[in-house]
Image (cartoon, rainbow, N blue to C red; front, side):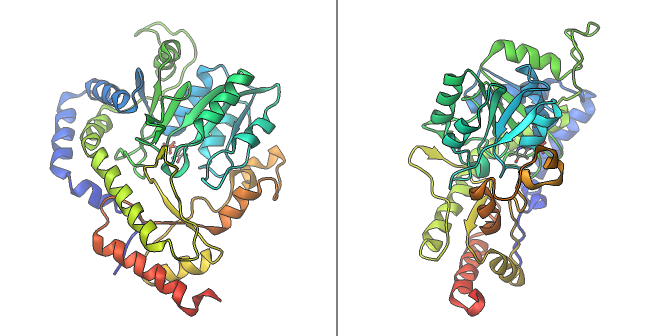
Length: 370
Ligand SMILES: *Cc1c(COP(=O)(O)O)cnc(C)c1O
């Protein structure tokens, strides 16, 4: 049996007719940049996240950059984020001219509030809290620290559309929530896309202009802005995919539950939600000291896995000028050597899930452990 890590072709094929109808409608309308489908998407996305506003942008990285810009973050400022995230959580900070400052994470792969507090300096302007793997970060603690120090919290929700913390959707805790609609994310465009949520009207008004050249109307430019808009065509496809999001989250959670039940007795660290967390399992990450052997064993049996992420951001060449070194973030670094993402997408069949479980059990029973 062959199980790919993800099957994007199948994801579209299942709803191809609806997608093609929507595409045909938009192509015929001639409305390509922003437009009615974008308006409709923004409305339903804000509803989904229980926020007052949402606005489409070109990608998740731009959602972060524009959010930082909306707070006036610039050269000389510092912004704290997690070193185990996808690198855009940090590059977005650097691209505004500010300095990315890292704080280590906890066993849940999310920022450790104590470490964040220790990293705050008089130059700190914001925290980017990442809900990595689709599991919410410790928002109560992070918001309290931020409030006490008078700094802002931006949520990086790129992996966490629909996730909940204490009964409330992510994207509504920080000054903004930044989502990616990249094909690999849980709510996926068929190309690049992003969306920002906020409850703050002033920030919303700024972002509307900032994503569109700083224009306040067709002819008048208030400030130098970005060209970072969501396509009407992508929005039309997303409006279809939105209808399937709840079901696909339910399916991801069912698979995660089954993994937990079946793998719990093995010598593995599994992700376990707290009672007040609802993860959307963008990734299902298991941890073992035999990670590389297990990855290879599964590959030999046709099961594709990934590592999110093998090189922490502070050890990337791009981060060299920040002068971090190996040993600075022991939990992140240790996790980078033990983590393995196994397939968890809604299109997986029961047989495939059973095969994955059986093969992992086989590995731990066999001599592959040496
Ligand atoms: C994917 C991702 C981003 C960037 O989103 P793009 O749409 O690819 O620009 C940022 N942060 C995290 C945590 C991500 O997973």
